[in-house]
Length: 500
Ligand code: ADP
Ligand code: MG
Image (spheres, rainbow, N blue to C red):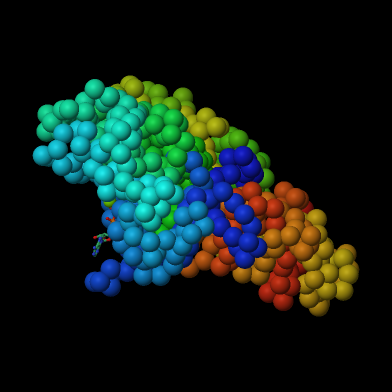
């Protein structure tokens, strides 16, 4: 993860109000949702998520992580044990499924086998009522003409305009799934929930349907919440990917960011067959791992900061013979994966996973070359914020371009100090004027019982904060610090250390 975050890349709307009553355009707000089934197992654990209107959002995670349960909670087929879901600001727990402005497409499309395509799609409409002030009670059924018009439109959307009369049993799997999508779209939901809708299709049909779904999303302009356990599908289709594990959100970000800057080892591992190696950021643009120093494109880390290096298998250049790359190694296995070879290469006591169009047989001597922009840096899980500062007065310490009230007993004005700020000692304020310094929120990761928020200050420093509040990426915030929780240490510059 680069230390500087691109603000644009982060505008994924992840939250709600934090007590400020701030308006946003989230069509769905999931707040503090926990689902415990009768057997006592917690399947969703205090989950918070905001979904922007019109986005294509994908819930991605391994089987059993709670994706379907979350969709069913939104659709109304399950009731939360705790928490509330809001659609367009309205709490929906008390609203039955059929009255919610959502429709679901399931993996097993469950069409009515005795009805033709038209009647399958029309089914839900016949139960629905439309508002009509002239009718008794202000509601009436749709007319035959209205139903035909709506069904035809839905069938056209899924590319089945001439299929209305067809027996659903005569359709291919892909066509049946299209009917299921038309059936969900015909009621004109504001949010379409899709639970692994392509899971039953073969690879070719799956790819085709991915494209078509994307196009439908663009044409309709409504919000799609799509569930898959397939990372490639999630990355190619979505505006925003929500990675889940064990009922807890691991990361929320745009696909590219998820791929390039996984927020933790789970995401990195799940998203691709990554090589994740512990390393040291020696200085700007220079990183050492597995006993070698390589050039990279990242900067802004502390000198010799410990980090994790993420290298994608397809980014490693593999060449024959030793001595013409960064790491010499021996191929320990080779598997053909359809369009490329995947090889395990033992080098410097690490087993690299490498993908290449060229096959290198087992036991071959190879060299691995890694170009600077193939090296992604992931911050190690920090435990404390550390800055270099200066005592500028009694109980006043300057760092990150701000003067903070911190007990300075034992120090004198002008002393250089290391300032250790625990994650829990930082308070963010809605109004940046209320803080000592200003910052932008660059990340907010839910960690089970609290949010770990990362901010990027106007002095170009990263801060981590543990907080019960959820913050939006790109929020402008003020930063306050509880000085009594901060520890100071005399700062000895590297040069003086060497002299001593
Ligand atoms: P996913 O869709 O991510 O594969 P699910 O939401 O279907 O995961 O399931 C998450 C976990 O909840 C699983 O361990 C599953 O066995 C459990 N689960 C789902 N539904 C029920 C239920 N009705 N009663 C008890 N456990 C359930
Ligand atoms: Mg599921």
